[in-house]
Amino acid sequence: MEFKDYYKSLEVERNATPEEIKRSYRKLARKYHPDVNKDPAAEKRFKEIGEAHGVLKDPKKRAAYDKLGSGWKEGQDFRPPPNWKESSGFASETPFTDGQSDFSNFFDLFGGIGRRPDSGSYHSNFFVRGEDQHAKIGIDLEDSFYGNIKTISMKTTELDGKTGHLVTRAHTLNVTIPKGVHEGQRIRLPGKGGVGMGEGSRGDLYIEIVFNKHPLFLVDKRDILLNLPVTPWEAALGLTISVPVLSGTVDLKIPANSQAGKKMRLKGKGLPGSPSGDQYVILKIVTPKADTGKAKEFYKRMAKELPMNPRVSFGKK
Amino acid sequence: MGIRGVVLDRTLTLSLTEICQLCSVSPDEISEMVDEGILEPKGTSADNWQFHGYELKKLQITLRLRRDLQVNLPGVAVIVNLLEEIDHLKRPAQMR
Image (cartoon, rainbow over all chains, first blue to last red):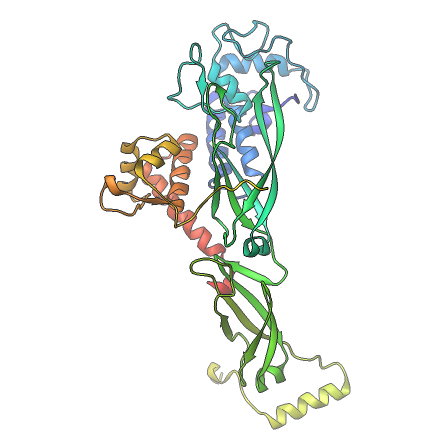
């Protein structure tokens, strides 16, 4: 177990007053709460803040932590005393508890183990339902278009039944990605969440879908968008062109006299569903470079023979 | 073989009892959230309320904000609206 600097987590000095600790905790909790902060690192930070506050807000725990902490530099290994057990009375030499074990705070320290307020008494019928867990999974557009199976790995902190020690276990799960899922949708996997205690059942796992950046398409729900570069003569004269879609390519008729930004719709070519999404194609006109004498001459001739003022609406200054 | 979970989309609907069980909340608490406008189930009264996937998400956000940041229900309502607006603004500009 690595030593954690709780003062650093809460961004306070070691001699901070309880008031300063509370204020800093509240400010940081609001900043890093995962529902409010979409940065993937926010959740970890939020847990650290909670853990630090849990210890530093209680004068007894803070004193014990300070005693243990002094002389320790961050990153040094911390070996817990041998009888660091989850029994109803902790061994007296463990610094984070006193005689009457505060069960809930022990688990606050290590996170990942849930307890619901209405769960049964933990002394006789031991029953604590595991916490629901939430994860995000990055998938490609093609995964949703065709459906796929993705492997995710999760870390859970559990109480090892044999040794009674807390262990962090990595689990991998193969999750079916159904056809047509879109960003923000979640898949609920019952019983794949945090491990419960005693007779308690496991919590659920919620996986939120996030799309990886696609080289060609932008996505909005089930609709996708393709920026299509064309030459000035293609836009002006019109043509039928082969454009990429998720399932391959289709022919798209570009009408004559198309302008830049023209938006065309390929119905039903987005992500599948009821209804299926559409694919939009936006024209982007790319002009040849005027970097040879011949090219410059050509453009000057074009200006003479096809005069037009695109800024006529600006009015004269 | 992959595990097939339940996709929480608009076709999945949960009853009041089911949603209470999933999230360990009481029907009274759900009623409060509906009154506050945070949850918008289909149906005319508590006996025939139908909550779809997005309502479940809002419920879980509400419970976490309350538990972790001590936000009250009117505050949660404002936050949920702002989160929806942020999601809307994050859409690719060309598609808005």
